[in-house]
Amino acid sequence: MIPGWFSMLSFDNLPDVLTPKHLMEFLPLGRNAIYDALNRKDIPSVRIGQKYLIPKTALGEFLGLSDKSAVAGTPTEEKTVWGT
Image (cartoon, rainbow, N blue to C red; front, side, top):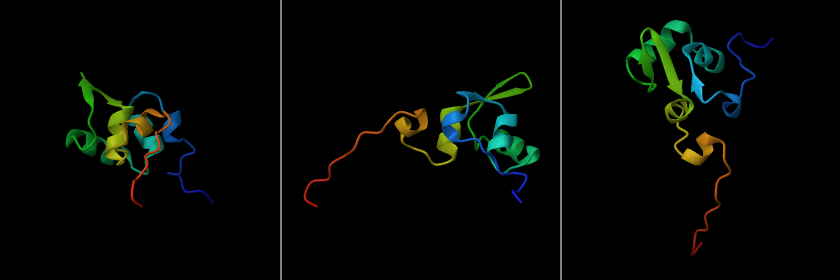
């Protein structure tokens, strides 16, 4: 049996601007944990009135995807390491 928090969503398939509901569907976190992280600014977001909007890149940073091209879903450039 697949746990209830398991999501078939992949990071690349998420919209560019997310809502807390998107985060709840993507991460194994509940509603309170998501809103606590947003209030603590662990996950960077913009608040308009009572609505939180989370850029996809901010979620990537929160998840440790620091390479901006990987977050944007574009191919990365191979790097050659000399002397190895």
